[in-house]
Image (cartoon, rainbow, N blue to C red; front, side):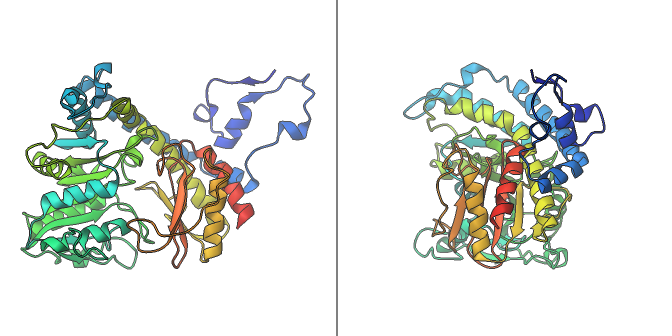
Length: 449
């Protein structure tokens, strides 16, 4: 009989993760299983070697997960979350007030904000960010992107690309400028120090790398940027595109002065369970203004039904988020370690602290990018037989290829990858309910490219 130990011995000994995995299995001496069968490992040698070398990084992530789980648990207890908050409703949604209020209160507490609106009616991170931008800006104001160009799907919201007459910020008389990144792909502190004008009403900070070959920003860097912005123009509001950044550190941007943050629930804070939705959190005045953009002035946070079991899934997903994000970060360390060992450029670099859940790999050719995504798709639990095809996608300037065999359509908190079909043909990997799936995927990737 095979006997699995109940504890994971890596945290009682100094064994590496893979050796700990091996040592947790005892095989009786009478077993007739061959030696080769007993020692067969589902990971290719490159992955086994990488996992063996990442013990300290994996352990530090587990400590982060424990800290953030404690933060979420405390917020739920303070909000007195109970099963009565899980029921859905129909129509105007007036009978759902208790669940909405408890979820908003808990979320605000978790991210260190005055207020939050967490809703299934936000259908993407772009939608939530757009509501926040239109809440903050009025005709004649200026929007300043301080971390280089924004994510592709915001270009039409702002009016940078193909949006004339559709109600972009540009259509409403809002002007736009951006501060280019520094040579090291971080914030350009010298230019940012003199970038604001009296007309600059909103500074947009994109925390994650997006589809750019750049570093994600730490909460500490975001805090430094906010201080620099407020020194130049105290009336300028700071909005952080927080997508892919939630729970990657022990703090969130409102804790260092961000006026608003926004993001998607089918990314980090949905914990791979939330079927839809997004959030805006920050100063109460501006959260209410964003809610009015989502619904209508006068309705704000008080309307909108979420039928069925969705409220329970939003609560449960948020609670699971720190653990799911931890697994995704471990996966990103593993991708970087393995692909760098094969001489591919990676961003972030191996073993460098993470500030989002995205791991980029520069593949240099269209063929390798497609092969990488096809290999990922073959290792997905849903649609493994589907071949990803590059093509146009709403909001994106280039053709994009997606590999996302996920239980929630488009959920990047589950294991997925994608990339625009443009030089340098980088693939952007994210998510994962457990890092071991990335271990299996990488074996297929190495065989394919």
